[in-house]
Length: 172
Image 1: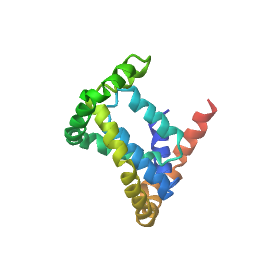
Image 2: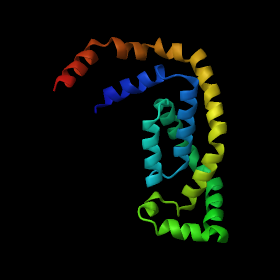
Image 3: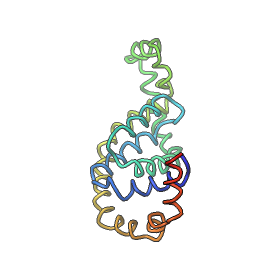
């Protein structure tokens, strides 16, 4: 897939699927994925879930990008939570059973930041979704029409060269 079609799809996602609920869940899932280390099976499975659900994917991607920059600060919260859970004597049999189960060690659950990130992310999932839904209402009222009428989006939609390119690329 070429970069121009990715930009077009990103802008299309910002101007369609703008139901406040879709925006809210996109932001909430982006927040959850953004809290986790990305090189684990858990993060990859959450990305697949994100793509499978009808949520606003551009908002999720923007939230993930934002959380990636905020994540070093959040690690100061998620690491102790994960450490507490992973070293808890009451949960020790559970961690042994999960570690000895096929495929589950690839999820990275034995990483303190990942385990803490999942717990903190799940605790904050619904408040973030609620705030994201409120942002979706605000976005639809204030920014969506401005974005649709911006020079950049109009240029992408009206460019005969881009239309020709996508028609030609689709025939090959």
